[in-house]
Amino acid sequence: MISSRDLLVHPTKGAHQLMFEIRLAIRDGELIFEDAHPPVVGNITIDRYSVARLEDAKQFAEAFLAALRTGG
Image (cartoon, rainbow, N blue to C red; front, top):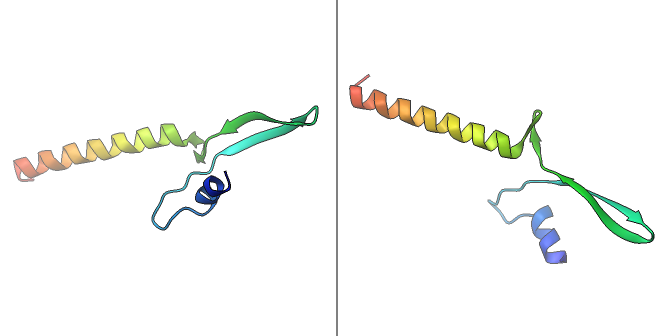
């Protein structure tokens, strides 16, 4: 468990790191998981942001290849 935490806090060189907010509480003397929130870019969650940027890259690549085929 400590090793897993260390990999999240100190990823290996070149590795990507996403930080989730994990909310915990103590109830009746026990640690309870309440919820988790993914990272956000502006006000968009990382999953929706990633899909949108992937679509942007796809559209750019399609337009670029089309321009190369037509010579301009």
